[in-house]
Amino acid sequence: MSSTDTASRNPVGGHVPVAGGLASVGLSYARELGAETVQVFVANPRGWATPPGNPKQDEAFRAACAAEDIPAYVHAPYLINFGSHTEATVEKSVESLRHSLRRAREIGALGVVVHTGSATGGRAREVALAQVRERMLPLLDELTHDDPYLLLESTAGQGSSLCSRTWDFGPYFDALDAHPKLGVCLDTCHIFAAGHDLTGPAGMNQTLDLLVDTVGEGRLKLIHANDSKDVAGAHKDRHENIGSGHIGAEPFRALMAHPATENVPLIIETPGGKVGHATDVARLKELRKG
Image (cartoon, rainbow, N blue to C red; front, side):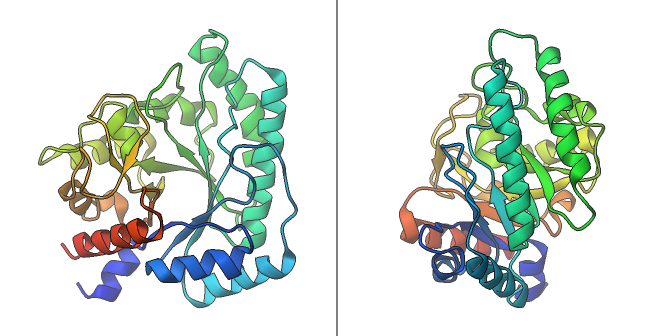
């Protein structure tokens, strides 16, 4: 397989800063990393603001990504929780996610990553999932064929998480009628922290097999490739550089050879700033060679 073939099978890139300009800052950073795919925020990830964006930067970003064949993704704000028992939080979650989906469409992004949330206030999981259906399904129904996918990202299993293990995606997909615009963003650190041991010879393959068995083929649309500072099952969301954590480098090689990951981009969200990010992108490209 040529280097061009491997790159198209699994483009490797990172989450890039965009303060100061989506295209001017974000894509400059991406080029310094050697990124083949990018992920961005279109709002403060720790707030509820829904800024309109800069049309000139939007067009420059969209045009550059199209010209350079760079798949782009948006990560929705962290505060979003469709399982919350607080109505104000749910209403803001709807507004925030609708904003992320709209902005993703404006910049030509292929998907919007959203955390699957938790059942707060001591409520039963089924009650929270019923609320997810009530408030999230209408947003999915608003999407057209050309709009971005909504990509569910599971958590490390802290607290009353609605989705942390691979099989938890099943009830979540059921709640949303397995909507055709619904997909999965698999975070390797999160799934490891939730209890899937990726370190054994077959650990990564088994986990990916379980995911496909749960949601079906073609639903895995994006991978957050992060090593873990903590051991499997620790329920701690602490990312580490590729090969420097408890997952290790070899499982990422297996990940990029599994049938379920064909044409699925990898985004790093690791420590170390630009130098650490560039090193991780290069490391994954090396592992991708097989």
